[in-house]
Length: 453
Image 1 (cartoon, rainbow, N blue to C red):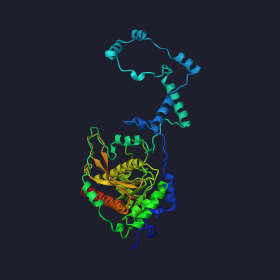
Image 2 (image 1 turned 120 degrees about the vertical axis):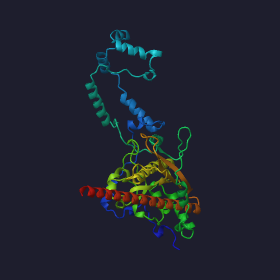
Image 3 (image 1 turned 90 degrees about the vertical axis):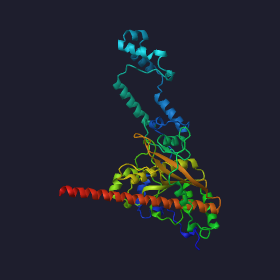
Image 4 (image 1 turned 90 degrees about the horizontal axis):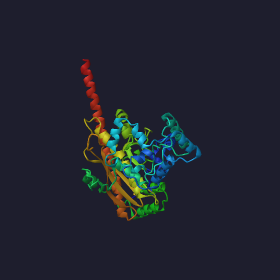
């Protein structure tokens, strides 16, 4: 029998240019132009202000230094002269003597039990000029803002892409996106999806393409050698992941990845960067009715290039030998929530109210240090009218792919089964959304004809 090897023509569906073999050079150039620089960038003030817990990272220290520098003003002769000229302090007796009765009453109320806690004001610098007109202050603030932006320290940077920070994980948690292993305050553990057993049964199904006669021990040694020799993430993807992917994908031409999700609405508050998964599987755009695509565009269409996969619900994040598995998990958590939101939008389309069935329809995977890990992501119903839905990431299993041939077969089978299962669910929700849309159109047309007659 033919061996599954490099010579057998394995399709590198996620990581080679053949993924977009039907696209022209113009489209490839379009992708390159829209790829985001993945180097860490400074975060804006809103990002830090909205974190419930700030970890002591290099980024947090840089933000503290930036803020301290922003409020620092050197003491010069000109500064002292200006302060003495414009600021005329008023002593308490004089202030109380000139105070209105209503103001005195308010002061007495505030001063009960020693007055308010002013410990936060200790060592705070004196204001430079209390009597300066507000218009002049605004002009000076604008001047400082322009000067600051020219010097490379902008007042407000709205986006960042630093999944290497523990604060990124905290940001997701603060917005109801929970990584694997998260516990609620008090120790409560998020519930498993209701279709947990069904998914696990599907993962362990055997695949003929991975039988010992077709994927031999020699094939495994080639995979292990390629995985161990890869020095960067891209070689890992092309050499190792293509072996895990195999050549029996039911829909290889609609894999994508490596471009930012520039068309999606922010999952949190808009202060973190767009997701950019290494690999994703989605549907052909023309599978879904055009009107539905327009209505749900910012929830189901990741890219501004309209011929790329839509409603992805299977993702992979890969790391090279020097990469951090925890970073891949954070990225997968972010990817999975976006995928679950897309499927939920299709599931709830033309329904009386959003559907929350506590089932998982999105799977994410990570490959780092020779280990393949699969996760589910599912939504839970909001706790109240003003609350957001929560996204729960749960680990399915993990396999040491470079360990032995049998473990590789189990892991690769689970990966391919999960990928095919995700496609089945995605296609089903697209079919149902199309059906509801046609029914709604028919009912509207029927009502219109009835009124006109």
